[in-house]
Length: 413
Ligand SMILES: Cc1cc2nc3c(=O)[nH]c(=O)nc-3n(C[C@H](O)[C@H](O)[C@H](O)COP(=O)(O)OP(=O)(O)OC[C@H]3O[C@@H](n4cnc5c(N)ncnc54)[C@H](O)[C@@H]3O)c2cc1C
Image (cartoon, rainbow, N blue to C red):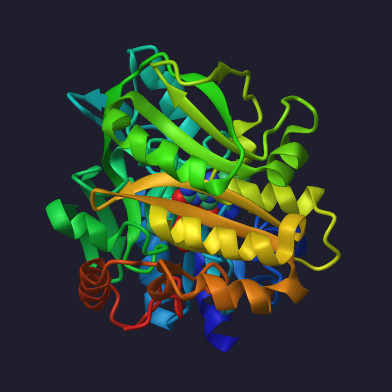
């Protein structure tokens, strides 16, 4: 506490009204408003104060002081992370980067941005030029690009391109940590993506874009999971013509669509330039995709002790796991899947939603297959499914932040 008082004096002198530590601000920034996990929600600590950064110099100064007094520093965009990335687990200084939103420039096939630029702001800018981001989150209407680079992985476009950072998705990223500024390109950008700000605060980046096409949302209904999987196998040859695909069981679609469409027993919703099924107005589609589904369901659910798990399942595993779980639980488990392409293979980001009491059974079936995706952990290591990216993160962490000042405790070395 004594060191914080010394740091506070320096912050007040340098930042004036850009440093805030009244109760209201402390309350606001100590919370992660979209964190619906009953496990993670209990782990937060109250922050010490917040700095509203307007430029790189502000970040540089904040890091210098936090580093001097060994005070944790947590970067924050819009705070929409659903997996505890913006939850302070130590008393920290939060640096809000939303006002750093002035750079937005097209450079050939990349978009240069400052980190506080909202995803929606970038999409609107690109749309006027006939372009869009290659992959972006279903929280595009609320989140920042800096937060997506540091916190996100999948999103709209992941059926075509996989993770947003794969294949030069980030051409260049500039970060700052206690050991100064670093310009990263090539594989080293992977040490920043999905690292939850533990390996540096992003001050600039260049992101991959594509031509905008007229994607039409369509619904195709099926009687069972086997038909769904066969259809998805057939679709693989059309990958470049399909922007996104989700799979919903009857109960999940009925609950989210609230009468706006008539669900089949199983449903595939896809956006394509080609015609595959009934064209539908899917205004609610963004409430379904990826993290949106368990946030949306947390509000609509009828389960008294609502709980959810995620598993990344290849098509054949999806078929076997879902058949076993549905046979055991029927409509007492809701299934949502986002269909992606990872390392050339179709993988379903499968979300199981049910009452907590059913998860012993669900876990016993789902954990036998697929790629683990630990949704109820605050630790970056538990979600990154590529060892070489984790190694890059650890390498950069040691270089940039040797005393673990940046979002401490979230990256295991
Ligand atoms: C309805 C809904 C749908 C979602 N859909 C998706 C989805 O499709 N795909 C997906 O990947 N995520 C999704 N998310 C999670 C989240 O919205 C995204 O990852 C998002 O882009 C995070 O942006 P943010 O500005 O809110 O970042 P924050 O939540 O503020 O921060 C996220 C992480 O990034 C760090 N960070 C923020 N800014 C910086 C910076 N400048 N430098 C270094 N680190 C920084 C933070 O410390 C934190 O660890 C969804 C969330 C919701 C609520």
